[in-house]
Image (tube, rainbow over all chains, first blue to last red):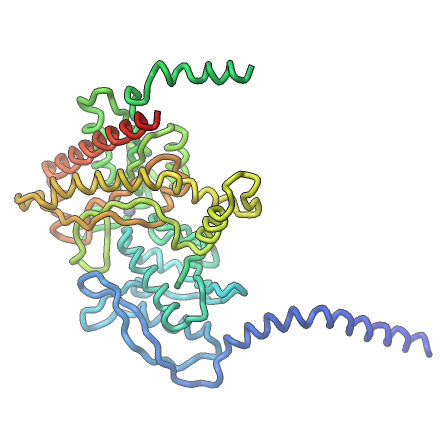
Amino acid sequence: MKPGRKILVAAVAALLLVSLFYFPLRRKFSLHEGALINSGQSKRNAVIFFVNQDGKIVGRDTEIVSGATVLDDIKSLITQESLARAGGLLNAIPVGTAVRNVFIDENKCVYIDFERSIIDRHVGGTEGESLTLEALKRTMAENFPELDSMKLLVEGKELASLAGHISTRLKLKVK
Amino acid sequence: MKIKILLLLLVPVLLFPDHLKVMKVIIDAGHGGYDGGAVSDYGIREKDVTLEMALLLKKHIEGATEPPITAILTRSEDKFVPLIERVGLANKSEGDLFISLHMNASPTKRDSGFEVYFYDSTGDAETAAVAKRENEQDGSVENKDRNNPLFILWDLAQNEFSKESSGASDIIQSALDGALNRNADTTLKLRDRGVKQANFLVLNGMKMPSVLLEMGFLTNKNDEEKFKKQEFKERYAATIADAVREIRQKFDKKSAAGR
Ligand SMILES: [Zn+2]
């Protein structure tokens, strides 16, 4: 065997060996990612949450065109919740709140990364904060039952609280 | 030798029983400085109402109480004080009770009234998991999960006082219910929304019985109007001060029973 071919064989063998260890790990993640991918562009029924005039969280049915992944759907639902509503419904998520990014970790925790608008436009108060958190939790629980918890970020950074009251530093249970 | 030291340490406890000790109440005026908190439609800012109420409460708590009660403010002017510093100041001052004052806000203008909160971290997925593990273990330091982020254990500090915090919340709620909610005088009447629990940042790591009082809604016109009137604010602060005296009596009875 030529020395050049020997090196090639050794390299291929090494690659095979590495992939034996690597792929089981990768597969775990890719399986998880696979579960996030929507099959084709289809319409999907969902529930979004608002506050009624009596200060209670109420759900409203909606329909979305599924994006490429579940992450797109989450972003789309929160965006719908931050649009001003007619019919006496108020926003638990401040009007004009923008979501920068959504991702999910291997512990079924969804990270929602907001623009600063969620804190700048927040009404404040413990009740105001509770309603926002409740609406987000219920949006996740009703539409994405596979999720266990959520974590709020603002501009990519951990958020201590929405308006100085309830802690959002840790993952919040959604179930 | 160790026994002698222990006996020496016991002397002050024997000479000055708990019921004679000076109670220290830490009063926390919510928000401040660039953090204005909630704002009413007419521009009344939460940070100003909380500071005014904190100063009034201090006056009512310290006046004519024997043995005296000392009130320490986490801020006495319009400045921003980080929440962690408020916790630090309260713990360093070795307070016996922490009261954080806030004004509430809601997307609906109908929400009105006061609510009294104490700490609860069970909504946190991580804290709940650590608390569960800690409860399952025997509680000795050696058995605690050393890999937990310190802040989670810090969060659990207030859990040790949950019974006292709950008791203090009940007393404050009941006093305000009597003086305001059940008052026939409409200029004083304020809805009682009860005692609730939530995971407050300012109560994380607090090593004393603690409550957070949402005194009323700045987003509700009737509530807001009341907080413009001096008589209402004086009555409100005096009622909390009465509740604090009642809390002291309750704590004293408990520590006397424990001796
Ligand atoms: Zn506040």
